Image: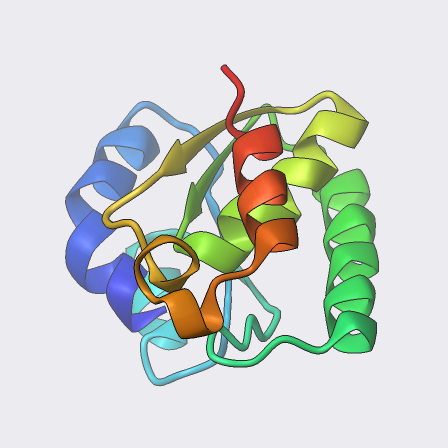
Length: 129
């Protein structure tokens, strides 16, 4: 939530001024309370960006589906590679409009050792438009 608070706070404030309801779904840290203070609702889901475990990723996928079904977002903005892929797939399945904010290529594309063909395919699939 640190990253969202520090780099997306002004965007969030603009949406809040227009009376949008803003949910921030991210890992827990000390910035959860800061986001609530400016008017966001938060949901803690841990996106472990450094490791890949098929079981934990599938469970995260299910948690995101349940979360989105509960809050019924009109739009979703995804940041960082794992939420872009997993949340993007959920949005495609649930037919929710979404935007992926890509700030760099990430290890999937730049580090041959960690390159993942499946990750690359999913990344492209979730960002077709």
